[in-house]
Image 1 (spheres, rainbow, N blue to C red):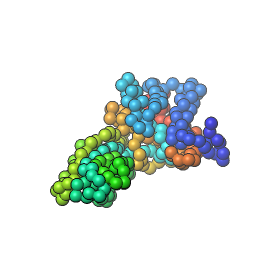
Image 2: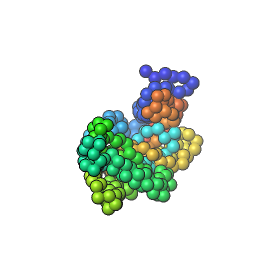
Image 3: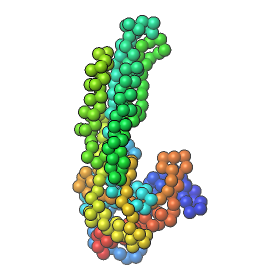
Image 4: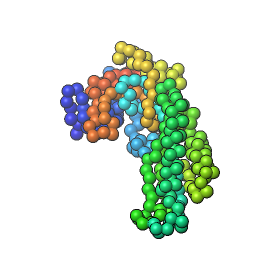
Length: 290
């Protein structure tokens, strides 16, 4: 159970994103209690697995279609119209196993992998030169590394798994040759470097046209309920909104305020949940009509 203190509800997931779920339910209940019936259908989708492969949203999109969507991730009551995507990749570096006392017979896969890691850092520096007005620069980092068998043996294998965060306009078709170029350049300098690349999984970034009707309705509702029109914002993380947009559903992101996503202490500002519910209810009426 959540712990309510000083206007904040504490607990794992309160901000990400039970606060948004509660706001959706409260918005629809408020319309029902007021006897207001939108001309269009209002669909609430509560799905599993958003933190990994978004299997819940994929299943939902097989049967549900809509004219627009709002994903209620926490946005500090801002209107989010862009977020990054990602590509996961694996690089396997091969060495030659040998006794640790026989360097002429062995090839150290971990040391060879170090050459790739150094180039990965150089790639990160080059990526910083690309910028998006709402999202900043793309990025790349080595997520996991595994290799070696024992102290007295030259390692014949080292595996690096990495993540490349992408901007609108970037995808795995761009990232794969980006990484292959690094491997090819290392091979050109080191005849003993042997490595393979595999793209494991990817999700697209999102960039929403600010002039879409759902975006204009949401901003109009913010003006009416909050007394202000929020600026457009972007989010560095990946959201299910990209899948909705990919399925032809124009989607924007709007949700409450809080702190501590995935942290030891997480909270949502209770008043912001109430405000989110009010904005959602008003957006439904403005977009669907009543």
